[in-house]
Image (cartoon, rainbow, N blue to C red; front, side, top):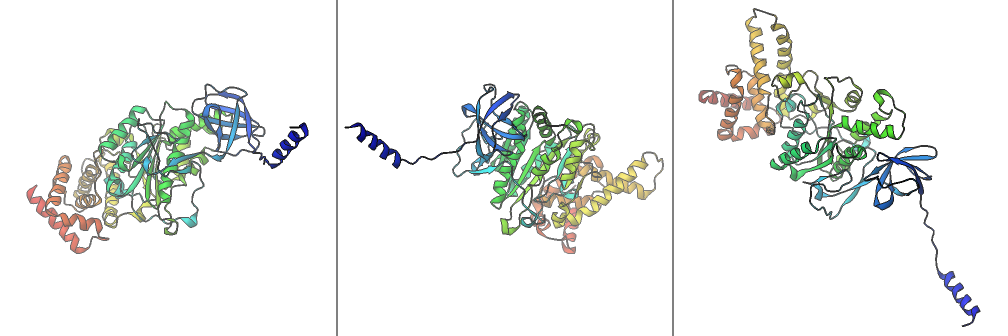
Length: 499
């Protein structure tokens, strides 16, 4: 074949071939260390965009400067070096979510860490960062989220779609309240997500074991970023948990998410920010630390029926130092949430458990969502407790008290005793109403204070065995009417003869 013929054949072949240029946003690592790297050349990159490092390692953008991008590495970073090529993936960081996650323990990237394989059938990629639903999409909170804890369901009620802060010093029972609430959702049909941030691995293992023992892992997902994990994973953990909760929210289901705890989340963010050379402000936190938590907690909501009608309830946990609720992170989160459950060390060591300070705890929404029978009964409880606290402060200095004051102090002591509750033993709402009705209406006035719990257990057992319809009526009826009230009084009179 002549040279001209070969040339013409090649020319025709090249003319028929279509060449497409695929633009790539590529940069180079300038410096790397402590799980953070600075990259130059990524001219068209956005915040929270996924980055691809060598050897399949991923990262995400956390800081944008004029000529340099600050990024966190999600995984091993020891092998990365100056000059390595980094590609922008063109999408935000996401986590694969499906029903298969229920009962599993995963890391913030969605990888299983419980020793079992995880295969999603129809996984949906949920973005870790997302704009919260607008006001038009939301519905007012009108359905109770029962915790099974008498002191909370009666005086600091939580509604589905609410954000209720659990705050207190170390070792005052904050996690215990959250775990009991998860256990109580067994018959409530609420999907639970527990996010462990900066906790010991042994503590996380204990919580998972307890949830498994109580049969709660069937409807629970645990997202774990322990104290031994990188600060970048601790930073991403609550957003990953929220993305999982939003998956069920968008399916029209009710979900509950526990962030344990956001103090350590703020510490991890501060650590990353300082390494990324972001200007620090109060207590060395960067100026956007408020936005860090507000954009997370705003995603908890109750959707209108037009938009699926699901709900995502958030229980963030914050640790205080020596009861100082006026510190930077606690005040930030108090201003974001719809109320707080304040746990006090003095009450805890005095044997009042859960150690809830009723005076400083408040629910700004839940009263509208409280079970009607409980709302009717518990209004009297708050008044009795407030009166008792005021009188008890003065009574310790008084030598002689009039009969009315003594009666109020005696009643208050019994209420305080009856609100004590063992861990991992949440109580159905019907039983709670009966116990609180008994103590506020004088049915327990003659019972010795140290026998209150014995009276409670035996009375509820008596009612379960002989008055099954009474519990159902109390739980379901919108109001305790005169007929039902007489039936309750009659039941307590019958039990009094037995006790």
